[in-house]
Image (cartoon, rainbow, N blue to C red; front, side):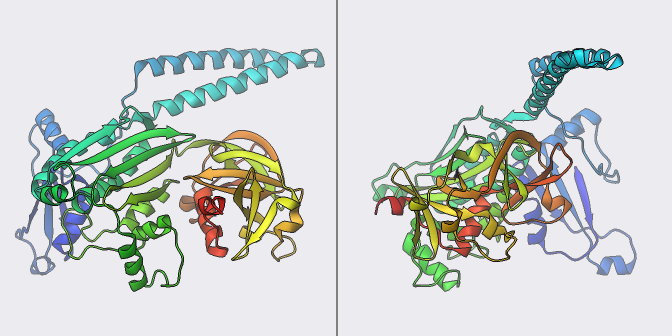
Length: 481
């Protein structure tokens, strides 16, 4: 049993919302308790919330019954189950590091220039050992996503009965590994998306039969690696999204104008706007007052993004892209206006020297670069971050001969205009939001070898920022012209 004492008036809905992430794995009981206390306390309407989970029940069996007066521990330790082979590899690498350190120590005792070659070899060996240990330690934090998927069979089974629908759950890529911290934080968004598919996405048996579909609907959870990211898809073969209905609702909410020309993807992304909902009645299954904007915000806080594609009458797919780890990334150092930035290697497609004749300007003042019969939108980091020494925007046409780094994220390609490319190195990510505040276009910061601070670029945010300043054309649409 876990008891929590609330010392102020709260609505029951506020309490159930806090515990909604565990409601499929516990029995939640709300009781009003008025013990012998002062009259002022009774008027305050104190409430006690009692939650009994499967984990708590197991702990009670091991440690005996807990008296209601016992206080719950303020913090619980977090454990990771690690394969012993990974521990053995880590120990072996530490042994190699000790040997290298011993060798360098001997060189330092009586060093002269004749030992310079051996010193360089020792430093290279030290770098290799350090990198191998770092990679091994990161693997220790990696766990199969099955730990997150395992909760959904029971949820789908229970909700299918409550909704009176026939639903089949498919799990694909359960062995795909991801950082434990990322996995813990992705649980809530996944639960929300699955509930949304069950409640709104899938039709009832009669409606499916009338649409010439199988009576049993299907929800699929799929995970796989793509580049330096992990992709998780939540899909269903339900009724799909009505583009016109979403567009009209967006106009009604004042999110867009009736004259706006939007691609299907841009219309579907209206689902993630705060307060946006197409449901005619509130449901206790999916939204419960919490919109998809919360899902998007939680995913973006992990350095990821979420997209959606749909076909009316056939189904909907929500795609979540996340970094493999929140601690370290392989980056490319680049400079713009004497500022050094880090660009994740996983998003880089290629880099080239920009030719003036390949640059074109489209409607909306958006510059594009023609590369092998494709038109790639150009993003000037100097103009975007306003770091130019002149204080005014610099025309892309005047930057002929500069470097263009082609990056890809979520099936979108853009070209980043940079001054120079430096070396590649692995960097430790420091959160800007924790130490300062969230900055659009940046996912964090790192400290370089010379002690200077370098900002880490966030491609998804950069694309969004640039789209707000200048309308970036749809690449597929441009290629079709």
